[in-house]
Length: 107
Length: 117
Image 1 (tube, one colour):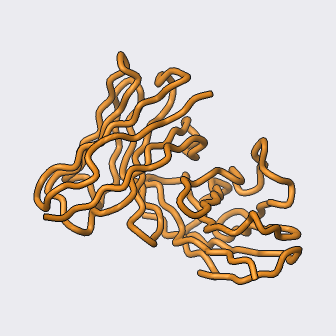
Image 2 (image 1 turned 30 degrees about the horizontal axis):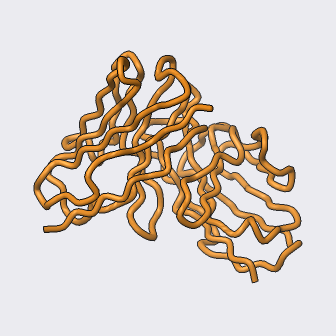
């Protein structure tokens, strides 16, 4: 099973700041890494697919990068509505697995 | 647009079987993979397994001995059964859609299932 380790677990950020979340895979997964946003009491929403590909309807301040074992989700100019938990997910190998999540709080 | 809706009992007794159904509305269940994913309160996401519309399945080894996922294409539904539940199975259970690429582009709203006597 591929283990995904996210960091940090929690981040408190002021609006307009830049946020960087990392996800490290226990083995190489190419670019089969996807990012989700989960707001309180909502289901997860796909933000980025295949490490860096944008999703229609997702604000352009969200971007992803990386390949192999190290990946990054970046939120440029954080907005209040971005308060949420963020999860990475690998689809390279079964079983499908998720990172432990990063909670982003707005100061 | 396509929507997913989970349904089933919100309370299950220990040692019994948890049963949930996901109804696909606004579109066909064909040509996609349909997964169950769960999230214990305050914790992260765990993939339980998937079923292809034609019936092929794959389960997370951590739950494989207790999980059955089935599909009813005539009703545009797929279902989850998890046997011998304990308090550790208390979670919000989501149904979700993916294609062969395996990322989840559509999720249900989730159904909280509590295991308690």
